[in-house]
Image (spheres, rainbow, N blue to C red):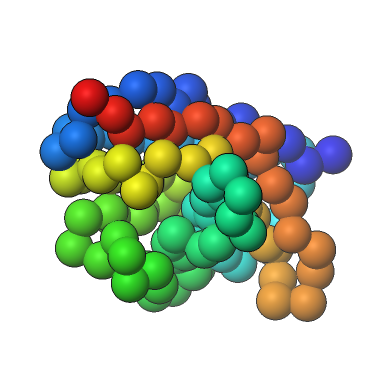
Length: 117
């Protein structure tokens, strides 16, 4: 059974930084894509960043230049380095994993990130 374990988020002041991690376990298949989504109160879940097995990355326009996604294949772990955080980044952040383009998505339990002074 696939499990995704996310690191804890937290409360950060505007302009601050935070790094999230997510470790996947429970499958012998290589991971096609790992990513982060977020959902703010009253809003739909949205893609933040995604990284594919070849290293190709995709970012939401709102986080380009501030967030960096990376992965450590040997540990099946994905990281999200968030810099210059703003109040509008406040949301529950979810880790996402796909083992192939045609298979189901796996989701982490979500971790709260709050940006406030």
